[in-house]
Amino acid sequence: MLDGLDEEDSIEEGGQATEKKRRLSMHQVKALEKNFDVGNKLEPERKVKLAEELGLQPRQVAIWFQNRRARWKTKVLEKDYAMLKANREKEPLWKSFS
Image 1 (cartoon, rainbow, N blue to C red):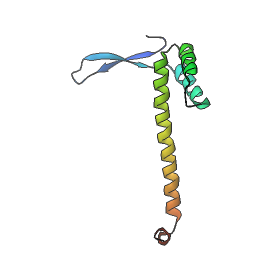
Image 2: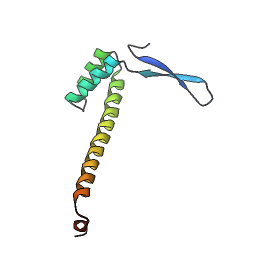
Image 3: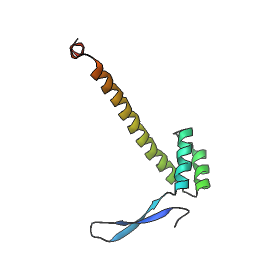
Image 4: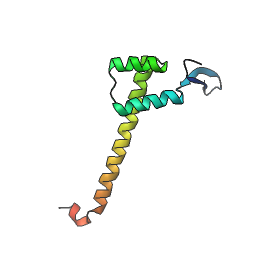
């Protein structure tokens, strides 16, 4: 165990364990999510403080935020697309060609 991280064996095609994949604890994820809700951009001071509080490396916090922003952006785009599609389906077909 590394500072509250769960470890899981990573297995390649040959069936040999190669490296440990570290997973964040539920406490760490909840704290990161709470901080993401406050602001999805991470200033250097906030990154270091959060890393120290959670027993993580600042780089791990930065990567988590980067990945979370990507997931957030995807959800926003999916929501926007669904709304546009619904609005488009409400329009009469003849109006589309004018």
